[in-house]
Image (tube, rainbow, N blue to C red; front, top):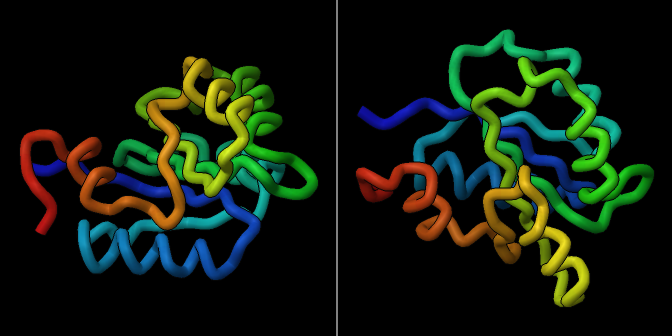
Length: 135
């Protein structure tokens, strides 16, 4: 049986949020998707929702955002209680070509991998459902 996931998209681009939500829903049948417009809202979402949900959490995190970018989010995320970070996977999702961003993402202990926008849904599905292929 495939695990249930709750997804939190942290991205300041509304179009990217909509496209990612549709890809998740239509291809992987994931409908429990929330959004935050920057890292600050993402941290607040985690604090507000804590572990009030049963499923594992996947965060799709953009790098370049106003107010609090993806790397600033990761610094703040590190200070959160372990209870909030338990069973959470973070995938950075960005269109960056900056080698410093790529290296920083790959070297962060909380980041599972860096994916290019738009979300490569087949590759993502294989990562989160390694024992089954997407529908």
